[in-house]
Amino acid sequence: MDYTIDVVTASGVPFRVVYGKRVWPSGHQHSYPTVAFYDRRYPDFSKYGGQFVGDYNSEDLADHDQGYGLALNGDDSSWTIDARTMRLVLRWLSSILVRSDV
Image 1: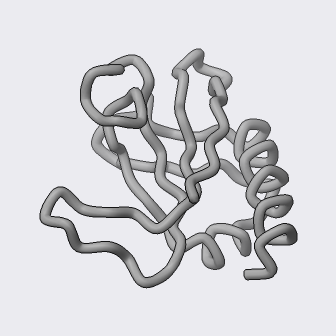
Image 2: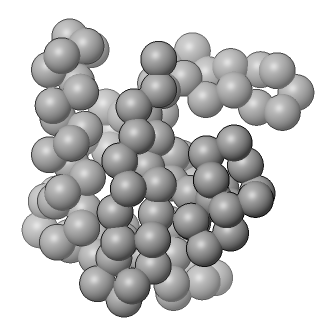
């Protein structure tokens, strides 16, 4: 089951954040849950309504320091989650991990 949250960064970029076991176009599925970020300015790029930017192991991301943002792609500064938005994402992820007993 996938869980999603839509957020907007301080710079105004809308992202959809998806928790679940990512399935690659080849059909391969991760053996562990990931947290994926999709840029919603490009809604036709995926079934999640945005261009895939990156994904992270959910447990590793849950350990991210809440005082900092997250650069999703160093080549594009708009693909950065600021610290305030990252705190929101981490609270959301924490609530899922508690419910899922992961």
